[in-house]
Length: 275
Image (tube, rainbow, N blue to C red; front, side, top):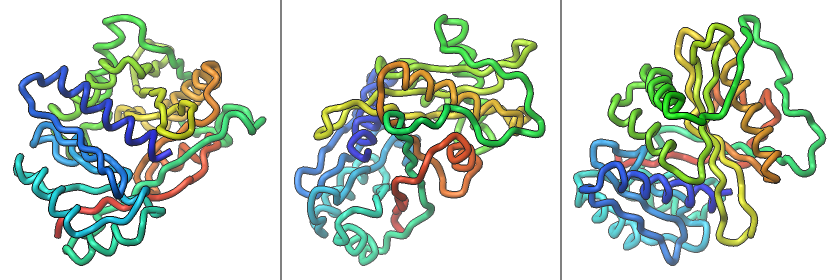
């Protein structure tokens, strides 16, 4: 699963290069400890400049950390490391000694579509549920709605509008990604989401990855997010995918909706930054 996450962030960077052709992007695979470091536009910080998969192939050293710090210092940043709980213990030890701390935890969820007869439906209803229709983006008009509503849904999270717009446009550029919008009976677009099909280094099979889930604030609690999850699970099953993943903040509303639709926590990751 974490190998698929590495593929995901690499494809994010490749799309950034298209959006920002003058940006000196970097994809740096860690040959010993494992993982990949991505570096893009400095003002986008951790969302598009971070390290994933570290320590899953071998031990991590102080020199490895120094090299990573130099890589990010070149654009005025410090490393942001998303460290899997199954990483080699040396990674956490080195980071702690260097005064890195965890600013939060991510839960990585998975759902087995091959060995489960569980229907792709939510287990509990929403008290404010409206009739929500989800469709795949198939036109330029839908694509513009996707970008605008994605920005609106994330706007109260403290990130810049430029970053939110970039993330939505990156998803729209990626050949491995399908975009979805949720609408009410009145035709109002109230939610957006993406489904990527990601390969892994060793498994030999592709994995579905749900990401960029966004619901406009006034429409939360009406079932749009659950409907978007369900639609992408059906699409993934229709493509013959056997496993679907997603990553979200531990204990968040998105985490609860994932659990309602049959996802289970596979592992957790601490987000380490310099203290």
